[in-house]
Structures are given as C-alpha cells and as structure tokens.
Length: 262
Ligand code: DGL
Image (cartoon, rainbow, N blue to C red; front, top):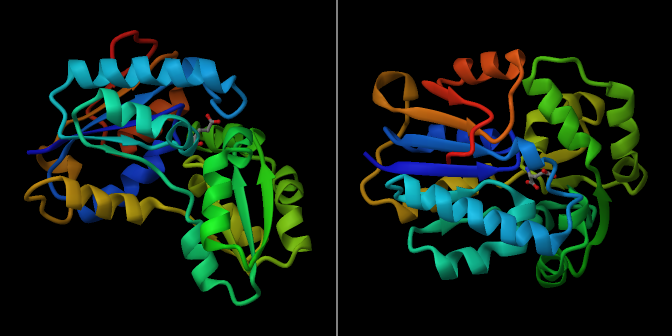
C-alpha cells in the first residue's frame, strides 16, 4: 500500500486530501501541519525556505514514503525545485489554477486569491504571463482568510461580513473565475459560493490527485481510510478540541500535537 505524506502550514492540505480520497484507493497518510509557524504567507521567504526544507527532509527521513505532496501554495512557489534537488522521494507541488481559469473565463477577467507571499511571487507572475496574458487579473492577498479556514475546521463561526469585504475586489472587477491559490481557501468554498454565486471559485485539488496517480504505481480508486488505511496527523503546535473532532470525522486514526517528531 502506498504511503503519501501531505505537508502544509496548517489544515490547508486537508482540502487536498479530500480530493485524493476521491481518486486513490488504500493509501496510508502521514499529514504534517506546521501550526507552530503558521501562517507561512507573511514570513520572511529566506527563513521560510530553509525551515520548510529541513522539515520536509525530516518527514522523508522518518517515514517510508512513496510520495510527498507539498499541499501548500506558499511552500510550493517558494521551494519546490530545491526540495526536489535534495529529496529522492517524488514530490508533488500545488500550482495555482491560473491556466484553468484563463481557459474557462468568458469575461477575460479572472482573480487570484492567495497569501501575500504567493501573490508577490515570480512564480505566480510567470503563470499569469504564460496563460492569462489576455485577461484582466485581479490579485487579492489575505492572511486573515487562512485564520478563517482554521477557525472553520476548529468548529468556530466565521465572520461572513469580513469575508465579503475581502472578496469585494473580484465582484468590483466583474471576474467570472477566481483561483483559490491557497489550500486553506477551498475549506471556505461553501461560504464563498453563498456570498457570490456568480463567481466560479476554482482550486487545484483534483489536478494534484491526478498527478499523484501518475507518480504512484498501481493505485486503485476510490480510497476509504476507514477500512484499512493508517491516517496519522502531526501538528508542531497544540491543537484545539474542535480540530481534534474534525480530524476524527475525516478518518485520522492517530493524532499527535505539539510534536517535534515528523
Ligand atoms: N495553505 C497554505 C498555502 O496554500 C499556507 C497558508 C499560510 O500559512 O499562510 O499557501
């Protein structure tokens, strides 16, 4: 049975895991949430780069992994090439779905909602130049939305008015497709759809799952962790009771918090 690791600053990668479960049968999951240093999107890129490389290297060293998913746009845009250069296990990154948005938009007006680090990254700019050069692209960066997604999975209520304010530039620019360029944000899709149903909020979840199938030999659809898979969750900080409950509901069989071991 393949063993797949997912890495993120927090619960963002759980949105990626949902997509993987729909495509892959019987994989053991090792999930690492770096809550101690979350959010990543406002950290110094040089520090963050070294920090992520040391954590992912430890993750790779301590588990017999068949694939590592960097289930975080901020980390992927920052250090994917370096991770691939120093780790032999196949590494799958998350790419903001700019190409998809540009191919579907009828209004030639798309949006990107991501963390500050991703929004100013050369990587995002190169995607826009390559695939969306004929579109008007509205970029919005938000760290607050990362906290809102964490709150939701902690079973707390989120401030709908605040959410509406954050996404207002997309409504103003009359975007018909907005890329959720942070893996935390698909957790808020229900709220986003309710607030602005005329916008298609798109993410890379299924593209990552498909990439995983290409990388892993002999996987079978669909996965049901409840049957015979291990799903282990690690967080570098203490997690709250609400998140613990959510993780149980998602099928995690072991939950380790405030751990230095990955
Ligand atoms: N989920 C992450 C991403 O996709 C990180 C968010 C953050 O920690 O700022 O960018």
